[in-house]
Amino acid sequence: MEMKTLRLAGVMRESIVDGPGIRMTVFGQGCPHHCKGCHNPETHDPAGGYISHPENILKAIDRNPLLQGVTFSGGEPFFQAEAFAMLGAEIKKKGLHITTYSGYTFEQLIEGAKKGVPGWNELLSVTDLLIDGKFVLEERSLNILFRGSKNQRLVDVKKSIEAGEAVLWNPETESGVLRYSK
Image (cartoon, rainbow, N blue to C red):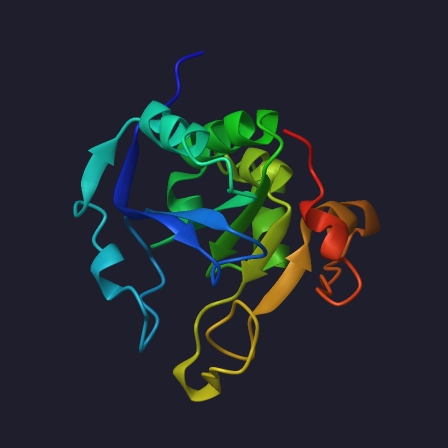
């Protein structure tokens, strides 16, 4: 099956602030949340950015043996869930960790997946770490790991799906999350 193209705002080839380890960050274009004080307001317009073929991202990943994972950010990755899920499936074949940022909560995403929102279940299934919840300017903090505001959570998706409720990821006790073989 041919992968769907993505509308992107940009790609950061190496990051240590968008999830655990050294990772590539893919910024999707389009966001329905429009959070006050958003760090990436230029990503809100669904017609902005540029079209990219996922193969280009996969080739860039292959050129960097230091990468431990890939982060889907935005915008809102679930705005293009089917395309990000397809890309994520190929990234998982490479043994890399996937972090996905979303303005939706884990519970909202599960509910949408149950209702059949295209791609939501598939994108959740390839995501290891979900950073969920809208950015709330009044709860902004520069002292919390991988998040912009204190209401946002680090959700271990696999454990959460098994438990039927959000299970928080603890970087102190679960550093093995990056021990994937290529």
